[in-house]
Length: 455
Image (tube, rainbow, N blue to C red):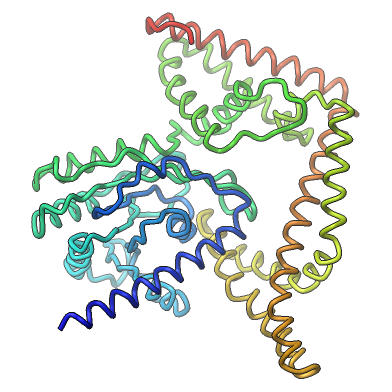
């Protein structure tokens, strides 16, 4: 009698392993780097409810599946099942549908079934993952957190407990959302033990979830503050450098979070001075964009020896990758461009990355299959199989080559811009130093007002 559940469980585990592997492959191609911080906080061997902020449509769950070893079942809006190809992928990942009031034709009464499936998953020691904001959005801060996550956890404990369920806040931060080969950050927050809450405390537990998510996400007061905070963070974190170097996303996150918190207090203490500072930061950022450089490039000293080593290393790598990269570029140029065309049809900023990813998921393998089929007809199955192995590899070399090539010439262009615009560069460096001094002075004033010692 127990054989069927065991077989079903094994089948699902096999599917989950395949889905996690697929997500790792896709995320490894789409993102240049994914930083994961706080993985040691993730409880093991207990039921988990993962709650994350939601900015990048289906990229968000793919990131969690790829980088959190928790095998969660996701909740997703029921309307996604109306998309034919996506329906199969959702089934493969054992995703559970949620029926939302704002979705036309959705039968919200079916959420009782959804909640019951979540309770059973937690009772079996499994993991559920959801996005409690309820929408994927572009706002500079968290949207209102819905009570669904708290209710699922509390009701599961009430029905089947004590289960020892933990709710784990997970923050997702993107360097350039929707941009191919950018960077992403996953921060795992402090787990919340559900047993400490009563069955009728869904609202209070939701408030705790909101606080937990606020700790692992960046929440700007307004969209206008984003640029000023990012610029201030780069100014204070970027000391004089030998060569330009971007901050790690986790380092940038910590600096920006501190500036957001300090900014609220400083606006209370020195409103006029803060308005002037924000205007200067925005003007500095605008001047960087006009010249086509970054703050870390303005801060760099560029010694000739280090420039020579950088040029030699980059040129050597590009020459090594060039032959395979040329073949890979010819093979993948058309499907790559088609992915961009598909993404341009998206009306909101949270969907282009998803459409690039999933259109590429079908277009690139279709290209490899067409080439293999043509070679099969011309040279037989052996060469076709060889082509099927080699063509994806040429794509990898093309990716590495073009990424290095783009980075190299962007650094060369920035270096020449700074050297050829000596007067503008001098003004930038003087303003940079003045802004750093002002930021330090304001920090000292805040500490004195708050009665805390300088660190």
